[in-house]
Amino acid sequence: MLNVEPPDYYPIVDKLFADELRDALKSFGTEIQRMDVVVDRKGKTLILHFRVVLEREEGFPIPDMETIISGILDKLADDATSSFGNLYGISFRIGRLLIEEKRREKPSETNTKLIVEGPGELRPILARTGKGLVIKMREWGYRPSTVTLSAEDGRVSVVVKMDSRLSTTEKLTLRKALEDKAGAYLKTLTGKRLPVDVKILDPSDKVLKTIERGKKSVEERIQELLEREEVRSLMDALGKGTPSP
Image (tube, rainbow, N blue to C red; front, side, top):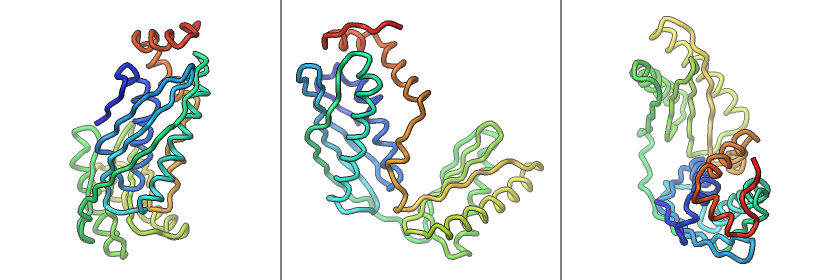
């Protein structure tokens, strides 16, 4: 749940900050249950004060999580200033940050969450493949907390989340083994070989990498905001006027 005061700033905070922070924290098995943002306007600077309520299974103690979230928000503020803000001559800055945490009961070692995303006809096949991969990983001594399989444009993506850290060599070895197994399962179930991409995530993965965006993505988000009349009017009120196309 996202609450923004004044509410006129909701679409800007949602597109440029909230969505990005939610995605970044997923790497830590952390979900945002509530986010309250107060926007304080100082001339042509928008200062954003955050209160974030988190729910997570495990991870870093609160001081570390504060450092991580603060770093993410500072980077997002810099990105928003250099992209969207540059169009109107405004800047974004992060003010206060308050974090509250709710612990989620940690699943047992034998309980792996399986998530399947894809076209209806492929979902049963992806589910069977995922179950097979979970069984194999347990045989190999791994206890993943979450395994996600998705299919798009003829490619299958497998994302494995581990709660314990793996060495670089372990990740490479496990990834290659899973790609081979998943490919074999899918060929048996579909009669054809589908390209498979596997990604292994553990607590050592750097969250800031997950919020890096290409130029096209940034432009798309800005364009979505510029197409909203209420956003254009709000930015006009800050003193520069609507930018030329």
